[in-house]
Length: 89
Image (cartoon, rainbow, N blue to C red; front, side, top):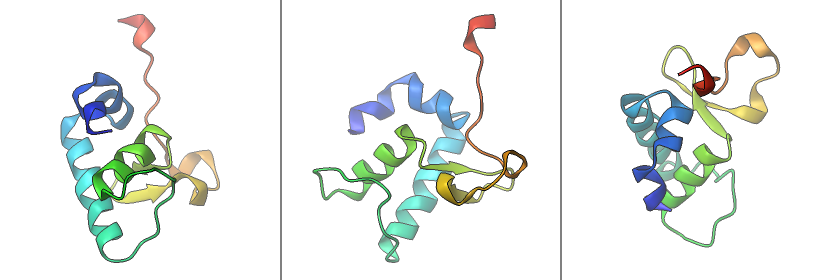
């Protein structure tokens, strides 16, 4: 799962390397404080859980750099993972 961090897909999904780092740090802190994982993975490594949550669009950073859980966002105006149109590049 950590190999996914070497791919550009996860970086683009979050909106950049710094945002990815922030999201990982904040979610790891939440898991260490007792938050429940949002995905089921065979690994007990928390980093694997966080990467899987990001790749499955379960978590994202909002405009104020706070971790949000996708299922808790009720409307489009509250934010979400960035929509990237790479076809125009």
